[in-house]
Amino acid sequence: MHPLRRLNTYYWRYRRLFIPGLLCAVASAVFSIIVPMVVRQAIDSVPRFVATYRAFQGTQLESFVYADAFATLAVFGTIILLLSLGSGLFSFLMRQTIVVASRHIEFDLRNQLYGKLQALSHDFYLKHATGDLITRSTSDIEHVRRYIGPAIMYTTRALVVILTALSVMFWISPKLTWYTLIPMPFLAVSVFFVARMVHVRSDELQQQYSSLTSRVQEALSGIRVLKAYVREESEAVAFDAESSDYRARSLKLAMVEAAWRPVFVTLVGASTLIVVWVGGSLTMTGEITIGNIAEYIIYVALMTWPVAAVGFVITMIQRASASMIRLNEVFDAQPSIPFEPHTEYTPAIEGRITFRNACFRHADREEKALDDISFDVPAGSTLAIVGRTGSGKTTLVEMIPRLLDVQEGVVEIDGKDIREWPLETVRTAIGYVPQDVFLFSDTVAANIAFGQMEAAVAEVEEAAREADLLENIVDFREGFETMVGERGITLSGGQKQRTSIARALIRRPRILILDDALSAVDVNTERTILGHLRSHFGQRTVIIVSHRVSAVQDADQIIVLDEGRIIERGTHAELVERKGFYAALHHKQQLEQEVEAFH
Image (cartoon, rainbow, N blue to C red; front, side, top):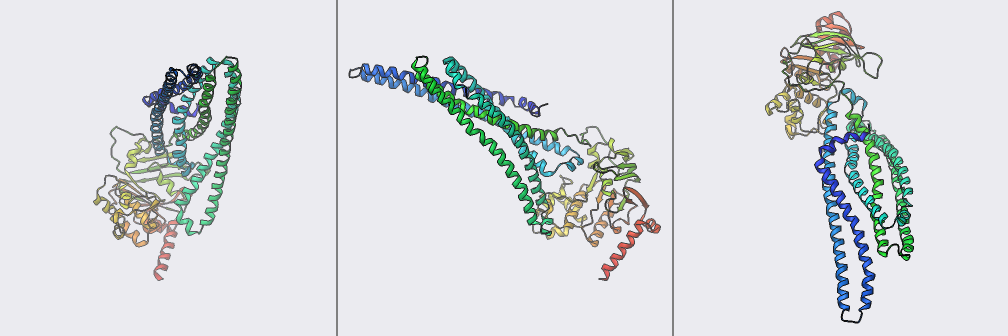
């Protein structure tokens, strides 16, 4: 299927704009085609008026002949002016309908693309750079819009002008018309080859633009790290290389687009020269009139822009096709975990979580990230997960809100396979604080209330208090209305983590997941936050992932992961007694605290 066929539904949706727009394009072209006919009649009338004037020159009728000639030419001029105004008016209406329709379709496409991006699963974003997706949402959609609006508009008007003009020209003089069209095949061949080169180079340019956008997006997102490691200069060099490549590809495309214009002008000029040369000889033999020569010259001029538009349209189509292929990759992508809205009654989630022989392997790895994981967390109890970096802790907790789906075995909530629950129900019941904290460029209050958009001010303040953030916010100059900056750049690491925790707590979820969410806070702050969280113990299921034993020692059960498998499980006291990995970690952290206290 041609990539642009997806747009057919939009044409039908906005047919009330497209159909009048196309009719206006036809009317505008017809009015402009009539003008040369009037010019021909005006010019052909001049010799007759000159002969009559000379015949009556010096007589009483001289002034009447002169007035008659002036009035006749004035009528022709008025007709030409009215035809031009009519052509301009319909041209205006053509743009007000077709271009407006293209803007509506652009709006729909962008919203549809954004909705699709929202619906796609986590694994899709592991394969596509953010900058590339931004490019598809902006530049690619703009290329498609230019095809929908200007390309269709130019094509319709060009076809009417060219076909009508050629019909009139053949009716006047087939011989002169054939001579006039001699340069046209060369023009068509040159446009064909140029269009092919434009397609290839436009695609290369668009790919490089995506790469350039990704570079800028990553640099700005990681500006703190970039400055901390004094990498501004090296990053500038890398950006210069990307930008130079983009410039080189842009210049290659510009050279191709610029090359055919001189060729086009030369060939059109050759057509005009042929009209004068051949038309002059035909005038001498009486086959055509001088007015016909003027008419032909105007027709050639009229066809100049439509033929040029063919080149523009071909370029637009090539670019739009390349862009639509990229957009279709997103539109046709299917989420590995589909989000389907449900209308049937669904019982509330209590919070019991069960893993039965669960396994998971990432697409880019051979070994399993999780292997034969089994445990049961009763509703209202607390589970702690500890383990080395890369042992599979984050992968495990991401299965609970179904950011990842189990590949072997079963994950259950309240004794029911998690895949049988509506996805909205599962995620609404969960408050998730990811390891990689993300805050929006908005106020502190808005970031906290993101977890519960209809939350009252008192609820926002209570969530901030439970996350031990309230005192910090009070110290801010604008309090809860303080802007956090892009990705929370104006906040410290601990403040960002606590804002993220408050965002989860304000939901009052049945299941609360903290994925190493206390790593950026000090021990005292951790103790305060855990003290507030303990008030939730027994009311909701809490899962804590942490490297600190102090954060997990009060959990009802603790599991220790290593290389994707559970190597230890039990309470804090039981695991310390076994003198395994957990006991060694506990002993090491005790020594570190004693050393810190000593200093």
